[in-house]
Amino acid sequence: MVLRNRVTRDVPQGASPVGASVQMPETRIGPVVALLRRLALALGALTAAAMIVYVQRDGYIDNNNDDGIGIIDAFYYATVSLSTTGYGDVVPVSETARLWTILVITPLRLLFLIVLVGTTVELLTERSRQAFRIRRWRSRVRNHVVVVGYGTKGQAAVTTLRGDGQDVDHIVVVDTDRGRLDAASALGLVTVRGDATQSSVLRTAGLPHATALVVATNRDDTAVMVTLTAREMAPKIMITAAVREAENVHLLRQSGADSVVVSAETAGRLLGMATTTPAVVSVVEDLISPEAGMSIGERQVTESEIGGSPRHLRDIVLGVVRDGQVHAIDAPEVDALERGDRLLCVRRAGPDEG
Image 1 (cartoon, helix red, strand yellow):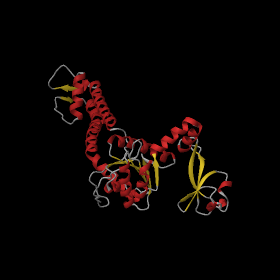
Image 2: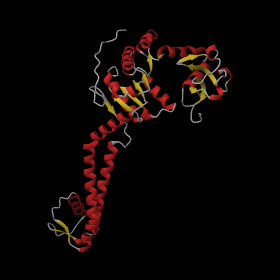
Image 3: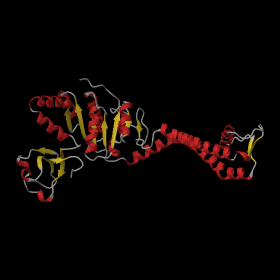
Image 4: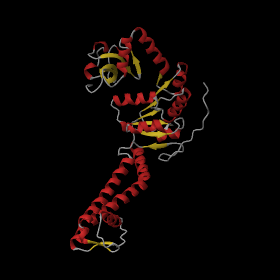
């Protein structure tokens, strides 16, 4: 595998790096629906004004026509009146018609103008509003998870994170594909469009303030470059990466990955197991699926468990994490639990968990 050379260019904190763009999740209704609603509101005001004029038609005169006020004349008057054009050919002459103009037509005219001007102002200020939201997000984002690549692996990783209780506003997706980013944004995720091998893009995603990085790219060499860049920027961050080929695992670990998953071999093992022991595959899938059934979790050892053996606990313990190292439950080093140990155990997933 040949890794391409690159030149790393950092940008000042808070600046907008070249080649990276942040997209905040849209929580409002779509622009087409919003525009149609405002158009319907404007047409409703216009129709209401026309109906008032038509009902009070005896109190209006048409200086260019002696046949009286018809429905077309009523809509014509409402149009020129609400748009403040006012040609003066159709005017109210009776006191009742003028009173209706004061009490109803004028408020409708203001509503009509507010709808038109409001739509224009919103379109003009949308970019500024987005820029403000991005600046506020950058100043507040902390302890989040950055997911590089939103393909099949990246989407599954985000689903698992959300199933484990991670808030959507604490997950940032980085990808170069606009379609994938739109799909992530539809779920309420903040997205960054750009090449994650560049430090400026990772900085835009807030990597220096993140707690974990998930590298789920489609190419192993890209995964290595992203891991190298990330480890240089954030020496203490937890990096989990996926590779297609087992021969590249050592490259990821040398690049700084804390955990490496071989996607192709893992899928192959499950396929092989399914031919002889399909029930085992069902249990494994259940354990790694956060939606329902059972799942593998990690928790802190309690005070009452200190000094005891992990084999004698009520929970099904699979391993003990001590000083960053995972030990089997029958290992002599963890025969007696200590304060600060963490237990890898089987727990119930889904709404009833906990």
